[in-house]
Length: 343
Image (cartoon, rainbow, N blue to C red):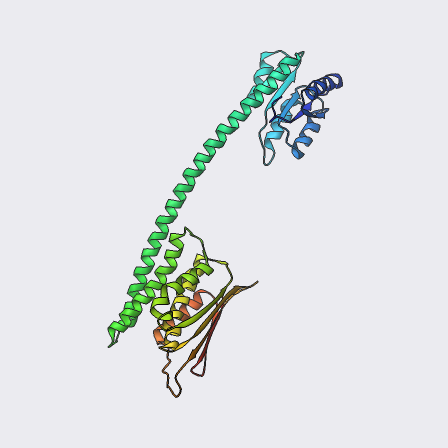
C-alpha cells in the first residue's frame, strides 16, 4: 500500500458494486467513505478532503461529471486525483471525462489489479505533479519577494536621501537667518540631520520598511549620544521601555523628537552637572506614552540659564503635531525636569 494514500471517497449508486469495491480497498488498507450518489459525495467533499476520489458517471441526483465540475467551483478548492467508473465504453464518454479534468477512467467490469494499479499510479503521478507545482510556485514567490524587497530598498534609500537633504536646507535657512553665531547653528543642523539619519538607518539596516521597534530605536539613539552628552557628564540613565512597534509614519517623527529632546533639552538642563535620567515608554490601549524624568545635583547658589532655543521649540512642536499628540515639559526648580508625551 502507498502509505501516503489513506482515504478514498467512493461515489457509486449500485449497492453491490459499491460494497464490492469497498471490500477490495479496505483489504488493501485504505479507509473508504461511501456515497450513494454525486450529491452525497459533493456534500462530503465540502467537509472532508479525501486523498483520492473514485466516482461512477451515471448516478441519480448528481452524476459524476457534475460532481467534478461542482467540486472545482468550491471556494478554497484543493485538487485530488479523480478516477471515473462507467459501464460505457464509448470514446466520446472517455473524452468528456478527461476534458473536464478527470485523471483516469475505468470501464466496468474491471479486475482488482486494474483498480489498485490505477489508484496507485494516479496518486503517485498526482504527488509528483504537486511537488513540481510547489517547487515552481516557491521559485516564483522568491522571485516576486526579491523584486519587491529590492523595490522597497530603492524607495527607502531615495526617501532617506531626500528627507535628509530637504531637512538640511530647511534648517540652514531657518537657523542661519540673522544669526551672528553661525557655527553654533551649523552644529545644531548637523545634530538634527543625525537624528533623522539614525531613524532612517534603523529602518533601512534592519529591513523594517513599514514598522520600527521603538525599544531598539530609543536604545540606539541613547547609545549614539552617550559619548557626547550622557557619558561625559556622568549621567546615570535608567531605561524602562515596552517592546512595541510604530508605523514608520509615526516612528520617524517620534525618533527625531526623542533625539531633539536628548540633544537640545536634557543635555542643556544637565550642563556639566551630575544627575540621573529615567526614561519610560509604554503602549496603552488607545495611546502611547513617553515619560522622561531628569534629576541633577547642581552646585549650591548656582544660577542656571535654562532656555530652549525658539527654533528647537518650533521643531519639537511640529514633531508632536505629526504624532497627533501632546507634550508637557515642566521645570521644577533647577534640579528637576520632567517631559511627558502622549501620542
